[in-house]
Amino acid sequence: MTANFVKTRIISVPKDKDAEHALDYNEATPDQLIEIELTPAEFEDLYRAGVFDDMNEITDAMIDDYEYAAIVKTEELEGVLNSDIFNKDVANDKLAQIKVLFQEALERGTGVYFFF
Image 1 (cartoon, helix red, strand yellow):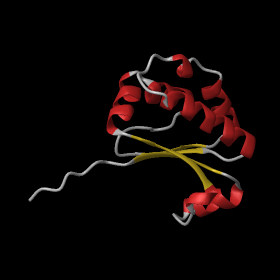
Image 2 (cartoon, one colour):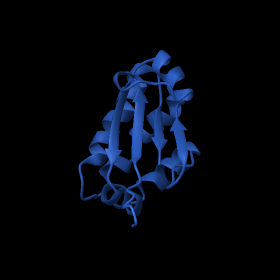
Image 3 (tube, helix red, strand yellow):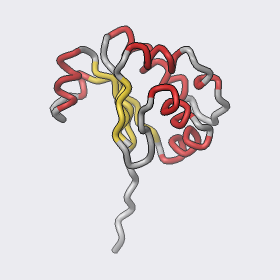
Image 4 (tube, helix red, strand yellow):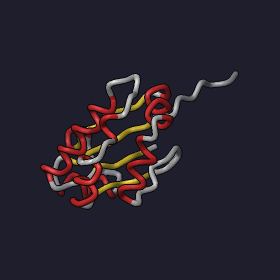
């Protein structure tokens, strides 16, 4: 019997520096994080639109499937927010939610973490 495995892809923003530290040690609790989960179809839509490639180019991150990446520098968070990434044509509402995550990270002095 074969189990159907669906890969979980989560984008997280720690609510404060304590939460960010806990996340570094895989000890953050759900109430310490602002998160969105991408379905396989949502991930594929964003990936094909070049969202993650553009983020990588702006920040020198390595956001990709089966990767962990983080964008934590203020200038990189601002660079993504000030780019055209959030104007891309995608078939889901996740791009708007990701923009909110970047805004939250900037306001909270934390970062955006990609667990793909």
